[in-house]
Image (tube, rainbow over all chains, first blue to last red; front, side, top):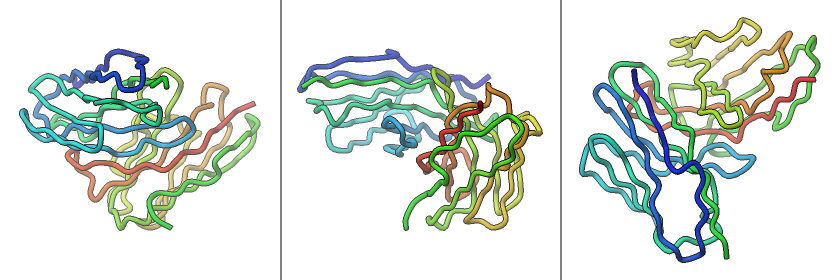
Length: 110
Length: 114
């Protein structure tokens, strides 16, 4: 069965303290792995799509990487405005839908 | 307007009321989705429409009834809801209904059942 887990559940960082969020997945035939950012009271905002192992995407202080079993969202020198919940989702060939992980709640302290 | 718009943003209703949630997308997409988001749980897919045809119904109770009159509009009709139905209801759209396509979300309707 397709499955997505994320760790840690919550992360507190000092401003400027770089770190990584993990998304581990089990899927038959990965078709796409997606990262989203969700602010309180808002819907998820699309960040990246990764399609194959070894692929990397960057946007400002965020960099997403992909292996055959997991993806990392690296945050370099974070700022308080990076505080949000980050969601990972995967689409595979066995189910006709995208499976979402539970998310990582990131807090960046000034 | 751009993106995906949901109304109302907040809704409080009694268990015997009937109400509807509305979603409109301005992205020219052909697939639309309803999700339920509860605290501490991953997003749960409820319904999928592709080119105005329902293609997925994830064992959702019949007290939730979707409607897709055209590719830009999606409704979720609610009746005789239960307290456990209180949640954030999110609408999303994608270019086509394929699992390699990113979905774009609205800001949701926060539903509270009294």
